[in-house]
Length: 396
Image (cartoon, rainbow, N blue to C red):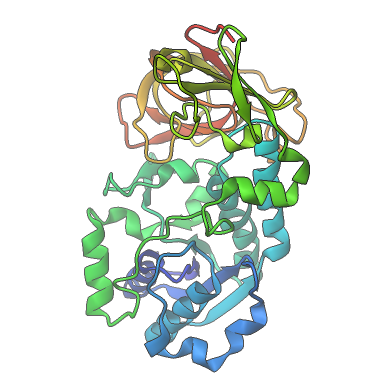
């Protein structure tokens, strides 16, 4: 049903074509760009008339939500004749950056894009939509909303190479009915670009964003150390037996499963097996030492009409990387329990355990894990955040 719809416009080709699709279906579209703040930029810069000159559209590699992206989104909105607003979420976005830094400081592996979707794109934007009388919130994500017995379900995008259902698992189930994801029905990215090209949108050749928007130089450790100078401290690198093999400049510089950049000569390839933030120690070992047989998960968000009861076990498929493979597993729901805010910043208290059918490489605390139905792998069951990892052979 056509309605007034708030569309998150990032300045990229996907959200631009989402606007085209919604307009063609009769929606009254209001474009909104979330200004999050980038180093050396201010909201006032967007008012510069030269920024809106079509000849100055920025088509280089960049993270999302930059000042250049805002100008591109405004150009598209003007071309399509829809209202366009910039909302300043910089203060709210600092929460995402704080979460990112503290996760690394605590030895966990964060996913800021998922948190941003939870807290801002499908959090604050839904609040803003209510303020302007919009019935729905839309975005350019490659995922779909399907109906199952009248109930909305989150599903994978038809273009499996671009599928983004993983980063949307945290959308509250009650918001699915008012969420629109037009791009999810496109079977290939080139078809999206073809639509943008045919409608004369200046972003039809714009590359996809690759970097985390607040780390445009991809220097994660540099950001952590600027916010937490105490993290740049020398620590030990040890093997799984505890023998010291070398030193490092801070455990936050390493990720579970990492092989390159260890600068250690050894008789066999070494991988990061564990990190102890308390002692600033990095443990390395063989690849088999990184294998996990299961994980404990907190902050559960179920997207099924009937969430599983505590103690209930069922087969599913688990995905623990944005573009990783979903692997067979058994999921057992656990009773809710109170957690410190550092482990459950969303305030959700649900939990579950995952037992992998076969051991998995480089699973780390802090990662998001998303569950899909075993019989219908395109449908999302829910997900959560990995609190602990059970290794196949824990020797460290």
